[in-house]
Length: 132
Image (cartoon, rainbow, N blue to C red; front, side, top):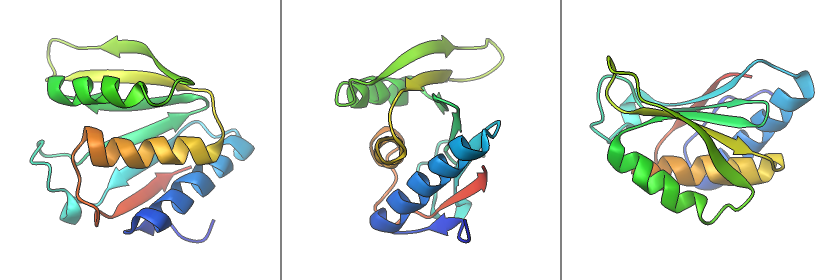
């Protein structure tokens, strides 16, 4: 891979698919997609949204409202399912682990929709792949 950020939907979908394919081909520990802090309009706290891919698992932190939206989004991705929800007492929100048994393009589509629909980012957000 030679590029690591994108700011339009088409560019992000290609970036996420390429990164997921590279992550799986390299048997990497984790692929991390971070939202550029300058394009984070979620007002969700100090850290912008992020999603990680570890093999066939997508990992993301959600507020209660975001978790409800995640469950709604999963109804459109039958090959994806929540495998684990962890809500530590010392943290606000829930860490969701979603099994994503699908190809890189489908994973990319889910990641894009999660950033837009679960986290409520606008269409022009910039995302960075910070680990493969």
